[in-house]
Each structure stands twice: as structure tokens, then as C-alpha cells.
Image (cartoon, rainbow, N blue to C red; front, side, top):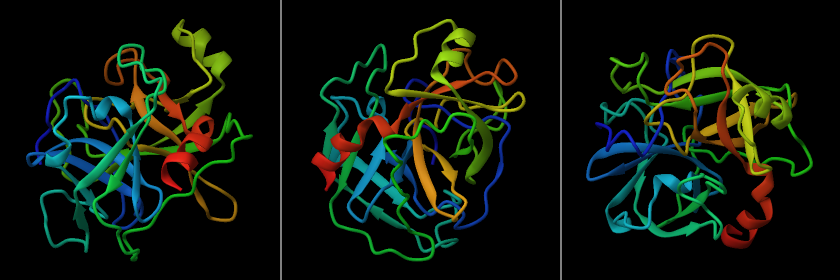
Length: 246
């Protein structure tokens, strides 16, 4: 699926290919056959994504979610499913220009059945900052910038969570409580096409936790080595998620 447009989303630059079923909560969001954002399955009925992916003039009835997919151009590689969107829940204080409260819930038109390659990701502890934790961000974006092409196969990079205080000093911008920063070890990062995708950690017990949603970057696409990107901090929105989804 080609990308919808360059404004709508960000992509993985210089990532490596994921394993099939390695991230069974990953969702590809498409409009009229064109992939443009990612999301994360949090239960059998809801996908969490970035609010700026689904703008107010987006024709909701034409959205199609690919759940459990790995290679977007091979239809029988995995037993993935597609779903329409029944309803979108935007955060009431989402700011489309500042990207404050950049979070939205997509209600599926019908629930999914969990399988080996379709599983929900856990929500985070609201009291945990995850600073200095190793995390992973995934997406179907370009592997190089500016001349690269979107990847048909899901890509990943490892990043490290940076404290909001330290991040604000690096980027010389205010980092609000609803944001979380994570930096790669080298010239890597998110770029156009991966917005809404999950930033996750794996706990010592093997549980995978959704700590962030790809929101935006300040330097373009991985133009500076080890420079942090900005994600929506999911732990700040647990009550909002519970009210709207559960």
C-alpha cells in the first residue's frame, strides 16, 4: 500500500526487519487502499493511534485497519484481518498544531479474535516514567531519507527513553506531561508514515507494554544522530482510555 501523504505520518529510518508475529498488536491504517499511519491493538475492540492521523475531515467510513499483518503487499503471508472503523474518540484537548494530547481511539466495526499473530498490547503503569528504559518503535516506513521508499515489511529500531527535562534541554522546546521522548543510538528515527504506531518495552516477565505513540520529530527524518523523537505518553491517558474504551 502506498502512503497517503507526507503530512499525515512518520516512518522508520534505518530500521531492521521484524520477525513475523513479533509485534502482533501492530495495526496499519489505510484510506482508499493507501497506508498512512500505524496503531496498536489494546483489546479486541479498540486501536490506539495518534489523533493527527485521523483529522476531523477524514472520511471515517473509508478507513480500513489491517490487523496482524507483516508484509503489506503479500496477502497470504499471515492470517491477518481487516476491520472498518465504527467510531473515533478524539481527546477533547487535542491541539492539531502543537500536537498536544495527540491521541485517539478507533472502535472496530466488529471485534477481532485473538490468534498467534493478533494480540493486544498491555497498557502502562500510570505511575511509571520509563526513563532510561530500552524501548522499540516499529513501522512500515522508508529505510533511508530523503530518497528512500516505504518498506512493505514491518521495520523496527531500538531507542532509549529520555527524561522530559533532559529532552527539553536537547531540543530546546517544552515537553509537556503528555509527551515522552526516546532517542536512537545512531542516525535512526521515525519519519513520515509511522505516526500513531507503538513505542513499547518488554518487562522482565516478558510482558509488552505500550508506553508511547509516535507523534512527531523536530529535525525531519533522522537528520541528527541520537536525536530524540516525541511520542504521546500513554500513561498520562489511562483514565481517558478506560472511560472511552472499557
